[in-house]
Length: 243
Image (cartoon, rainbow, N blue to C red; front, top):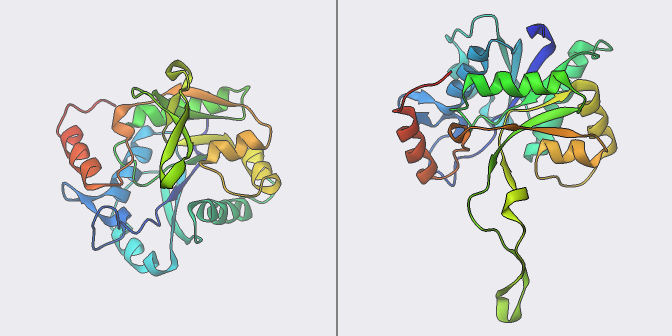
């Protein structure tokens, strides 16, 4: 697929509170390079993404713009825009910027929503998910990994406790990663049709009635949220790199 038809939206408005950081999470450094920059490195190295739009809170615009300056991502163009109060609001804001730029020429384009906090996502995984989304017949594709822990459903119990109500079959469960890639017309339609909270971008597309394919994910595409995640990322970074 032509790279000028593959567009990445990169939500990066996290505060870094759970990381105990004094800077926004996207600007926290992992071995000397900000998480956001590493995420963009992976998108660019995939060779399939034509442009990336980083979506941040208004107060971060100056800091992020400065962090992006001087980086070379080859043919992949990078820009910044202001997001919203919640992640879904930020994705919607970025989508508006993208569709305004494209106008009516949206057919045949895809959008990849990728968390800046998943900064070690291998370029090969980006290529795999984009390829699955382009191939169809599903409206999009997401990377997933098996759930290794036993999962319980619970309900409020007496005295503020919780009561176990069931044990889902682990064989049917998957943890979802990013990038999540969708046909742009379907993603726009989903945002127009679905209101209310969603847990991720794929759930929005699913609720709009579209099918989403699952692609094998990668342990390195973990989301960095806590100090433990950051420590694990340092270990993974020190291992052998696989494209």
